[in-house]
Structure formats: structure tokens, C-alpha cells
Length: 594
Image (cartoon, rainbow, N blue to C red; front, side, top):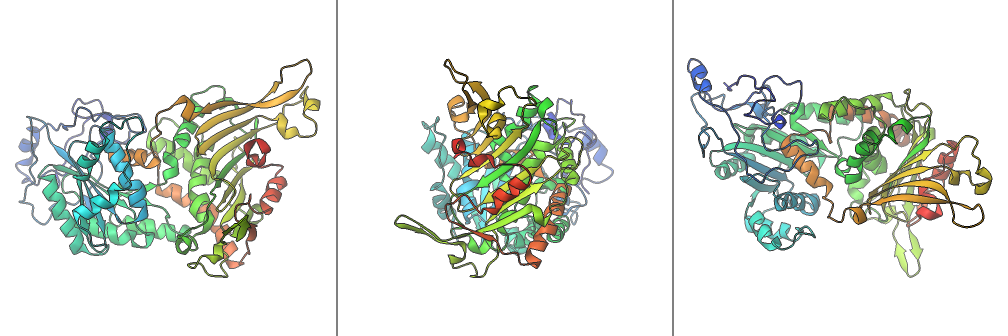
């Protein structure tokens, strides 16, 4: 029987507010040991829980709260991850007490799929960056888990090649790196083997050494084996006395049906609060700043509606093709890979109403309202394209179907543009345009807000026939070269009346010379803290798929042939006609933004 402690308020000196991640939670369920029923009240009254943390472990998670205290809400009864020693009620799990009234705890992070590119290039470097900035607790262990046969030392050699130190703190880099690598271990095993996960559990317990154990699993693996890993981890490698959380990488299915099935399967072993669906774009600095820009600056909030905004554009472009990922990409395409998740998530953050607070559920509630208010995407409001081979000078660039892992007759789009609409009072009639593509002329991700023309503009004749130059535009460069700038009209110095459009520019590298943390660093820290604001809730995922599933099925059933565009170009011409249909011109095509 799990031990249930009496309710502690968020103002209790024993816990920090971050110990409870939802304002509605009234009690904490925390499996510590299994005493007999008769002795439990006496035993419980003698213990006052207090979490021991490092003095320097004071970084704030993305909601602004300290992550010092552990969260007690994960692994609750009803989920296999929350079931503790039910077969042996007489067995007790004792904690280490370094000082009277203080419990030592440890954090164990297991990267499942540790030999893959994502783990090597993003996850391990992000974990090292958190350690480098003193953001991890004193007692932490990192395990890599994959089918590849590796020793601990071979894993350390592999990941050491991708670890880097902050540019502004290089004096103790090598020492920090060595200490971090000594915390990294490896367990080889099959993804569907309970026996191998039981072996992982034994190794984790050895490192945890009887301390209160919190466990985080990062699933850096293909989605078709998510459920196998979650089943094995829940039954054989979950924490017996702390929380257990699982980070799940996209894609979350291919459509509404497969996404719903994946969610139902995961919830056989996990509660919703234990599932962290990661979209790394939500961890990017400019996306994080979007809400701050809007809700903390009076100059913008009154303008944030159909009354002043003519259209909003979400643009994503890469200057390279699939390059070795053709087999994976061909099964999903650019709409599922980029638009349905990255761009739609940014749209929801942009268009949502003011939340009640910065609490995760308040923000996610507002995002879901936006998604449910949106008009289902129609085929006539979508343009798809596919890049073809192209020669530039002496260099030749391959087409999408030249990839040996892609079928010669593939109709998978590598480019898509779409017009979406939100049917609510704030945004009725405003086109939200998305554009995403591979093998284009530039690499960029940005949000462009084009405002309406000035009524009765006294200076309209000074702009000639190009009325778009007379409108203001707010641009948020997400990547590369993070920046926020506002296009305004002003007079060119001189005796005449010549007008010019200039930028009020906040260039991050000039204003904030310190290196900007990678999105994975912020999201990993939030998952450790239990902060869910930047992770996707299941009903949010359902609403997102409901928008795109009908048009995706129509594209595939009707076998719509994508418009070809040369590698390194601006994309298919059809995207310009789509924008013109809604009286919009793509903002990234002007000469000043090229």
C-alpha cells in the first residue's frame, strides 16, 4: 500500500510552490514505504519531509519558479509507474538522511535511443549545458539505452565529440566535461525486453544508493516503438519512491486516428501528467518571448486583433533537402513534419486570449480554445510542392526523388503553403498564412505581422503604387540571428518630402552578447521540474490533428501531384497565387528581406 501524506499548502515552509505543479491539486500522493495499517499514523506523524538540494541549484524554470523541490504528483496510483512493492507489503524502502529532517534525492535520466543522431547532437549536449550552468541537482546520473553494443567508456567517447562549453565560460571547460562524462553510463538492450529494462533498473538502483529516486526517460526513438519502451519502463524500471516522467518526441501519429491510438496506448501505463510531448520550437527564445512581447507591452496588446492586423505569416524554410532522412520523411511529408506541430503551436501562442495566469494549464487551456475555434483546412487553401534537381554553376543539386531511399513516383510534398482562419471575435476574417519547405534559397523561421493600411493616409502619394510599403510590419526572427524588428515609415533627411521604411531593430546578438541556450536545454529543465507549459497536452494534440487530417487524407486519396520547384529557389509559384487570393504578399519576398 502506498503511503498517503496529509495535504500541505503551497505556503508550507517544507515545500516550495514548485512542488505542486497544478493550482487545483489538494493533496500529494507519495510512495515512501509500506508500513502496516495500524502503525502508519504514528510513523507518519514523526516525519517531516524536506528536500535537500545543492545551494547552487537555484535556476528558475520557464515559469519563473525555483526548481529546487521535487514534484510529488507523478506516479500516482492507477498507473503502473505509480505502483510500488504491492506484491511485498512487508518490504520497506528507507531513505538516506544526511541531516535530521532532510532527505537526499537523486535524479536519473535515461536517454532511450542513445546511439541515434538526435541524442548525440541535441540531448546529451543539452544535458551537459545544464550541468555546466549548475542547473542539475548534486546527485544525478545519466544512462544511455539502445540496442547497439557499447561499453560505458565507448558511450562517453561518442558523446564527448558533440559536447561544447559556453563561449563566455571556457576557463573550466575540460574539468566540467570530465566530471559530466563520469556520470554517464550505458545499458544495451532491446526496446521491447522487460528483462533488459529490469537490468537497467538494477543499475539505476546501484547509482541511486537508497536515496529518493526521480527518473526521467527521454524517448529518442521512432514512434512505432514508443509503447513497447513505455510498457517495459513502467513495469520494470520506474521509480519506487519518487516520480517517473517520460519525454516523447514527435511525430505523435500521422493523423487523428493514429495519434488517438498512440495516446490511448501510452495512457495504459502513464498518466497524462507523466507524459511530456516535446516540440522543441516551443523552447526557442523568440517563441518564449512572443507572450512577453504581447502581454507586457501596452503598445501591442490593443493592436492584437482583426481591427489592426491584416494578416499573420508563419514562415519556415531550410536551404537543404532531406539528406539521408528521405526514408523517414517520405512517410510524413512537410505538413506533418513542420506545419501541424511547430507552426501550429506558434500560431496558437500568438492568437490565444490572455490566460488567467502563467500556470501551465491556464496557458494550455487558451491554446486549445484557439485550435478549436479554427476552420478546418480546405484543399483549395493549400499548395504543395516538391523540389527537383537543379544545377548552379558547376555544382549540381539532387531532386527529392533522386534520394535512393525515396520512390521515384513519390508524391510526398517537401513544400506546403496554407491559409487558415480563426472563427472568433478577435480574429474573424484575418488570414493566418503558413509556409514551410525544404531545399529553398535560405534558412529561416519567422513570424510576420502585417498591419492594415492607415485610413486616409496623407502620404500615400509619396509611396507610389506600392501600398504595402505604407504599412507597418512586426517581424520576429526565430532563427537564425534572433531578432525583433518593427517596420515604420519615416522621412528621409533633406529638403524634399521623400519617405522611407526603416526598422526599429532588437538584434539579440548585439543587445544580449551572451550565448542563447538551446531549446532542448530549456525543455529538459522544465521536464525535470515538472513544468508543463511548453509541452503539448493530449486534447491540444487532438485539436491540432482535427484541423489537418481531412486535407491530408484528401491529398493522399486524390493523389494530388505537387508542383515542382528547383532546388535553391523560392518555392513553387502556386504559393504566390494562394497569398494573392487572400490579398496578401509574402513578407519574406521583398528585396529588403531577401
